[in-house]
Length: 168
Image (cartoon, rainbow, N blue to C red):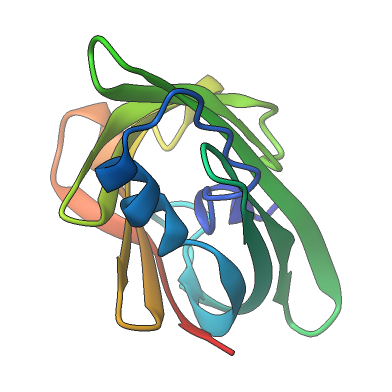
């Protein structure tokens, strides 16, 4: 079964060197144990599928590591992970997402007001193009992950992944 859980939770194993104190405070919000559920739509023609995810994050001052699994139908499990690095000059995060059936994907973006806004560049075409948009937002013990993609690469922007997690 080909599931694009890759887009489900792209905030795993984050390494962020040379971070300011304000950025460390922002990164700390992703630390802890998280669990929750949501939906993942494999492609534009399929129906959304229910998923549940468990993540664990550990903050290390200038870095944070988050890893975990997402499950569908209580049978299919996928380990997911992300490595991001902050370029202090540009204030942009770049890295790699692991866990997609398409292979490792490139990530790039920024953090503002506790939300990571990332562009995903897949190694091959998914849903008519090679890019998607991911937002990872954290606020008061909650983590919300969405991935949106354009129909056919240039059409309407549609939410493909929508997962809400709470800190336990």
